[in-house]
Image (cartoon, rainbow, N blue to C red; front, side, top):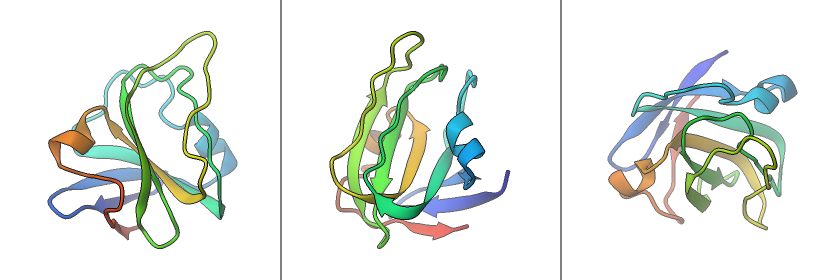
Length: 121
């Protein structure tokens, strides 16, 4: 899987890039850890409403939805993994990208809705 970087005002994460349907479906499933400055970015063909779930993901994550201009439009913090019934979550507004990082990362690095991210992909 390709790698790149997502940069915030005061921090950055090295990301695995999930571009294909298969890569997006698997995502961070079956991982038991994720280093502090790592994550996964999901790139979609079109900007639209993107819903996610946490089936077989074993670590809590902060999930950020980003529009085509690089603006964070929504953050779900410390999303808890699920195993049986997994409900979908996410905003009712359109996003082109979704970034998953360790739970608590957004608070530790003062990342908020409305912030702009820069990407080196």
